[in-house]
Image 1 (cartoon, rainbow, N blue to C red):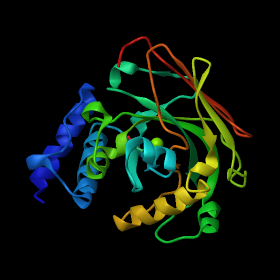
Image 2: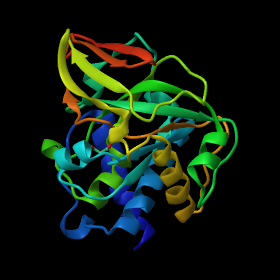
Image 3: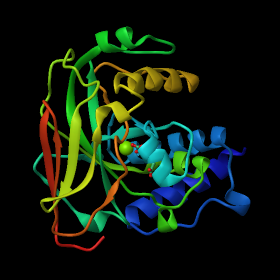
Length: 260
Ligand code: OOG
Ligand code: MG
């Protein structure tokens, strides 16, 4: 594919994100395959970095049945996280920056050593500095939150913001922790960290393998989001969103008064 086409699509998606205005799915001249989609994603994230954002890690997508079923997708994907996406725990999300944001409960790992290629869960764990309960805020840049797998990969796996809770020791058992996502005091999603590939550490194993396919590695200091354990919940203005995880504590953020 021509680099001109990659740049054109990256610019289209970058603009949709910056203006918080949905764009149609990639069809016709802008239709792409999965390989091209990751090229678009890289170009898109480079544009953010050229505006002053820093790369802070990566996220896994569709690591649970609940997420795959909600979006009608069967393949794991990944995206790049940048510093502009970080929301302070207990902080406020400016809804005017988003199109149709949704929140989902996740586990976040921070690495103390790089990880690369084909590794075992034990090797993955030995590179973890700490882990935390987290909420990812996703916001597809496509109309009606509808996409094919290449579409969503090009759109940096819908990533838009993340809130990370208190850090815990890497040997904390996160294999099967109950969790509740609630909005304004109402439980909206319930599940277990076991929904993430049977054990969230497997998301880290997959992350190392998938980035290696693109010639990258996971770096020390990077945050790795393991993927949503439940379906994602739509966000409204003036809401308090809490994810409570067994043994790990709660993660909170608020949405402001503005409409998305
Ligand atoms: C794509 C991103 C998927 C997850 O945790 O599974 C994802 C989407 O659902 O829009 O972040
Ligand atoms: Mg996610």
